[in-house]
Length: 80
Image 1 (cartoon, helix red, strand yellow):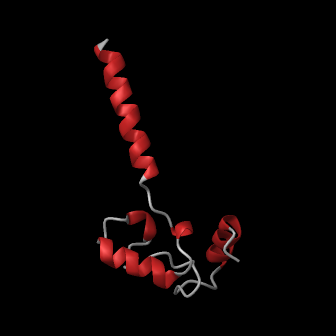
Image 2: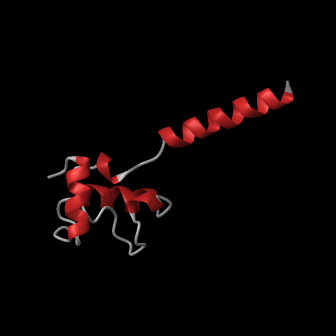
Image 3: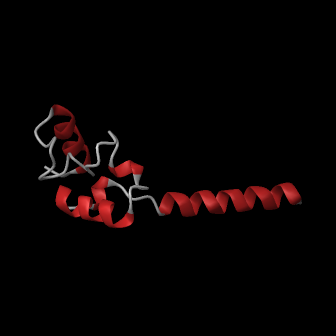
């Protein structure tokens, strides 16, 4: 019984964590993502994968916008 309860609690926590994740595809451009990143603090590591202080650089207006990796990212997320 205790094992079942523990598994249920862990599953519920994992579900809540996944639902709360913020990703670049939720923003319309780099500027919006950067404002969110600066307002919420730098705890949102998924928005700044290269740790240079710029969030979601592959979105429109980002510093890496024309790099090949960004073209692939934009195509994958429908941000063309």
